[in-house]
Amino acid sequence: MPFSPQKRAGTINGILFVAIFAAAATMIADIAVIKNLGISPLVVGIVLGIFYANTLHNKFPAAWEMGIVFSGKKILRFAIVFYGFRITFQQIAEVGMEGFMVSLIMLSTTFILGTYLGQKLFGMDRDTSMLTASGASVCGAAAVLATEPVLKSEEHKAAVAVSMVVLFGTIAMFLYPALYSAGVFDMDARTFGIFVGGTIHEVAQVVAVGGAYGKEASDAAVIVKMTRVIMIAPMLIVLGIYLSYAAKKSGTTGGGVKLVIPWFAVYFIGMAGVNSLLTQYSMAHSTEAISTMIASAVANINVVDTFLLTMAMTALGMGTRFAKFKGLGMAPLYTAGAMFAWLLIGGYFITKWVVATF
Image (cartoon, rainbow, N blue to C red; front, side):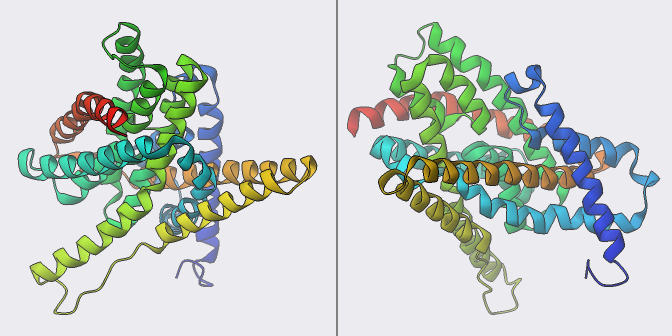
């Protein structure tokens, strides 16, 4: 137990150690050039964590390891639950059936494609394939973090997935505007916003690309992206059921099926519901002072939640040694590249079809 009398001090020191790294990551991510690239504190945190794991790891007490593990497991689940305060059901309703259908189609097809190609074509293990697919199909680094405890995978596998999200998400930030400005994407501003929100990896990257083309594109991009974000909860529940079925089929459960339900994903939807009710109350019944107070409280929750997610990502990086990457070769790059091509090309035609149909 991490907080037993014998381990309590080491656990607390480990948590504080991770918090210091996360604070440094937050400050680095706030530097203008880093911020403009859409690189979140979560990504900076994992880079700092990996640096520590491969340089300074042996310089600090081993007793702190319990606190690092606690940050990467328990604090992670808590942070994912409160990630729901970034979303309201009203936002999702605003973009209508078009945004919902684009999100649903792109999430499901990208996840299935990435998982299949990673394992069958490029020879990666199941966990690395699924983590890489979740990052591309849902919401980047946060999705990788949310999927990792369902799979119970090793830290370095999540680190591989996050690195692919960073690489191809950054490429998308520059490629999408270039192609749209050149007239390659034959879309109006709102349709382009739906396309951006339905296919680009990170929330920050979506904000950066959509915001460059006016309010209509920006609003559509962010709302569709938030629709994809909330879909991580049902995706993880379906994934848990699939893993239970797969374990039963392979005979590794010893007969009975233990249904894996990621309850933190269910609570995540609950927090989104609370945020939706608060928003509705604020708009319908309250005075300006109460509305401001509610908005401020939600904003503060999101600031704290981002820091907790950064801690979790940093802790994940701290468990990642370069030696563990041996044997993966170019497979993650090929898998992520194939998903990126699908998001870009397939996403374009699917968005055009959905907007024309619905």
